[in-house]
Amino acid sequence: MADGCKWYVLKTVDGYENRAVTLCKEYRDRDILSSLIQIVDFKIPKDEQEEPIIPGYIFIFAYLDPQLYYELPRVPYISYWVGTKIRFITKDILKRASPLGVNYPQPLSDEDLQRLENITEICKDFETNRAIIEQNLIPGSVYPITKGSLTGAKCIFQRLVSSDLTKAEVDVIIFKRPVAMTISVDHIGKRIGYWEG
Image (tube, rainbow, N blue to C red; front, side):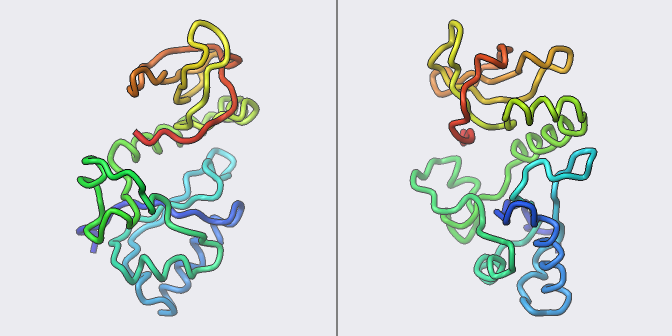
């Protein structure tokens, strides 16, 4: 069954991630939506306090076919598939695309899964997690640099420096490529969005 399965992201109602997974399993076990048999595993990354690290999202390991694509959003608390309706198709998107077509959800790449694992590890450290929340920083998100010599550039926040929570490890986007640097947290402005490569 795991042959051809990939990890996908689903948007859920904030605070109802566990309920969405429970309902998916109930609908599958009671054969209410037969296509849910294609889902092999669910994942909700959590911190030490068992709170979702990325509220409003669940991850599924599934074999995607048209029936699952159309039926899964019918489960209560699941809003939509993440990674659909791509406007600009690149070679990388074509390479990673579902056999169903480029406008079906993009599966997570190995790099995406590693980034998710890194976020999970970061958030297991409660003090660092609290500092990230207080600064309103989200790993993998894009922020403007508002102070210092890099003012006006954009950066992708990766993590806080564990030995000095006033500093952040970021990838500064230079010529559309991320370059790893450490900058002061107070040089980071409000979130713009997520890095899409």
